[in-house]
Length: 77
Image (cartoon, rainbow, N blue to C red; front, side, top):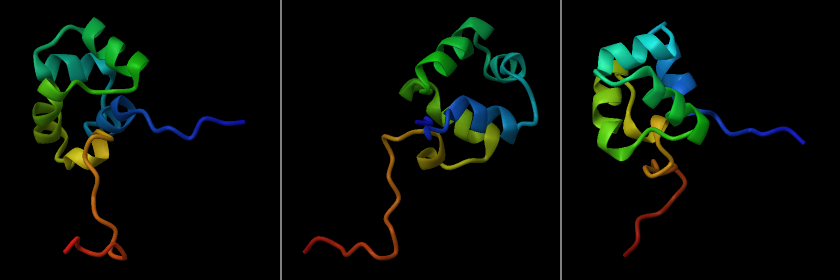
């Protein structure tokens, strides 16, 4: 069985066309922090806005805490 989880650090590094080290430098964090994010497959909430700004990606692409509404979902009344 394959793991279909997309690591948000992969998405972020591809968006900047760089490495974990490049991401860390651009965000002003240590490379070990980005390594930890990759291991946990999660960008911490306190860093999410900065990563979104750097990558020009919306939060729902980098965090499962944000969900976009499907065009088929109906508004709750």
